[in-house]
Amino acid sequence: MADKKRYGLLEMDEETKKRLDKEIRKQPFHRPTGEELKAMLKEKRKGLPRPIDVHCHPYTKTGWKSLGRFRPHLEKYLYNKENVTAETITAEAPTDEEWVQVYRELGVATTPVGWDAETTMGLRPPYGPDELYQSNTNDYMASLRDRFPDVVIAAWGSVDPWKGKKALEEAERAIKKLKLIGLKFQQTGQAFMISDRQFYPLWDLLQEMEAPVQFHTGYTGLGGGAPGGLGVKLKYTMNVIPDFDDVAADFPKLKMILLHPAEGRDEDAVLVCRHKGNCYRELSGMWPEYMPINVPKTWYELNRRQQDKYMFGSEFNLFPLSGILYQQYQLDYREGILEKLLWKNTIRILGPELERSGVNLKEWRINLAEV
Ligand SMILES: [Zn+2]
Image (tube, rainbow, N blue to C red):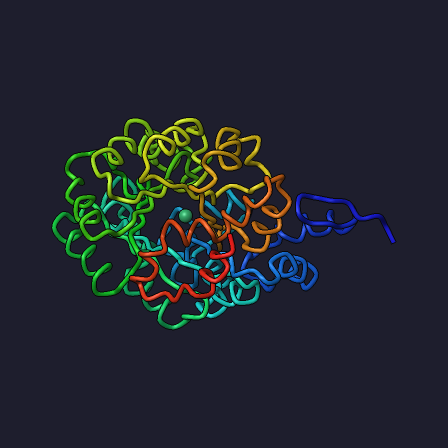
């Protein structure tokens, strides 16, 4: 038998490593994970509570339409696919049950996010009109949670900031009536700046309701590589300072989660997070193996003084959940940091909001007490 080598927290021989490195990139990402990889991942978290995924999308047979015409392009950009049509995407996408089953099999709890960019992506320019577009509504997000409570422990809503008063009403309904944990915004898709004063009533309301908010940070794959980026402007997510910093300063009780590794704004994201106590981070949207090189400041801080600020997200099912975990376990984390990322920080940072959404945190609190 070939000698086993250490790769972070995993141990395997070179042949196995080569095989699994390939296996995690096989499409589509919701297909059942191979037994060998599944066993390896499960072994790593034996006796520990489930990791919590705070950022993923239900790109299901209907849910993928929230990306509208951007989705066929993403199939080429991310996966090098040709001859992609709405029909082929729908045929390949998972049902809700299949989507949830991946989490169940791997023993991961999840809190998927909604998507409402109807004005800018569905109805009007810059990206509309687009007949493919369909929002992942707050009712759909709540229904995923209610139909699959063993896996979808909570869900994040979304409102279209351009809907004005209606957006405020929907935000209130999402948090108070549907008991969603908070709201997610994707400023490139929604084509707006969070520091634009006309949207301040939204942040004011969310702060008042003590509802946390997820904001896209840094580079976006939306329209990536296409002529003109399909009209997408990076400015909406690249102004970490002053854009995010302003909102964090003006709404000190609003818990802000800066999504993704903030590629292109690595240092700014680290600085905002250090300076603003109400800012946190999540690192999906980039294969973990690239993090130490692509966002070195983030990687450095995550292992040191900002180790309590980071939460795990997968960007499933644009990325494979098993593959993301497989790579996470291989990174050279300092002792105990990965556990913080996978669930401890999430319980500390979002505990009250998860409980308010009806999540029983017993599974995680028992272990947290031992820390
Ligand atoms: Zn996302």
